[in-house]
Length: 171
Image (cartoon, rainbow, N blue to C red):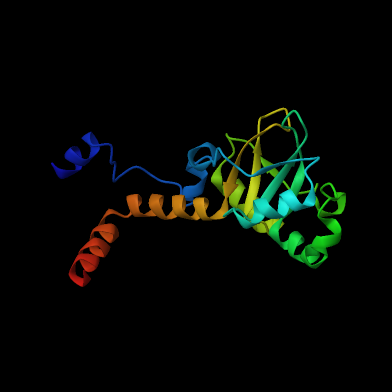
C-alpha cells in the first residue's frame, strides 16, 4: 500500500537508479546565466575593479559579438597584481587569457561538467551555445556539488529522514 502511495507521488522505490546521480542532471539545471564577461578591449584597471567586486573566480573574455576568447582566472591575476601601476592602462594582456580551458553546453551532464572542472583545475567553466562560442552562462563547481547532494538526499529517503530528526533534536 505504501509503495503505491509513494509511486503516485513520483517516488518509485523499486526503480533501478544509476549510482552516478550526476548522469541524470544537466548543466542547464544549475547554469549561472550571469557570468562575469570582460570585453576583449577592457583596460587592466577595469578588470581589477571587476575582480574586487565579484564573487567569481573566473572571468570570461569575449569579443564584441559575445564569442568566447578565453578566461582569466583570479590565480593568473594574482601573478601580475604587483605590476598594477604599470598595467593600469594596458588592454587585457593576451598572456593572462587561458584559451585552452574547456567549455560545456547546456545539454551536457553534470558528470561531464565535474570531470572537466577536475581535469582543468578550474572552479568555473564557460557554457557556450552548441555550434558556436557564444557564452550563455557558467558552471560553478559549488553548484554541481550542491546538486549532487540534493539528488543524493532525495534518493536516500530513510537517511534524509534520520538526518532531519537528528538536526531537529540538536536545534
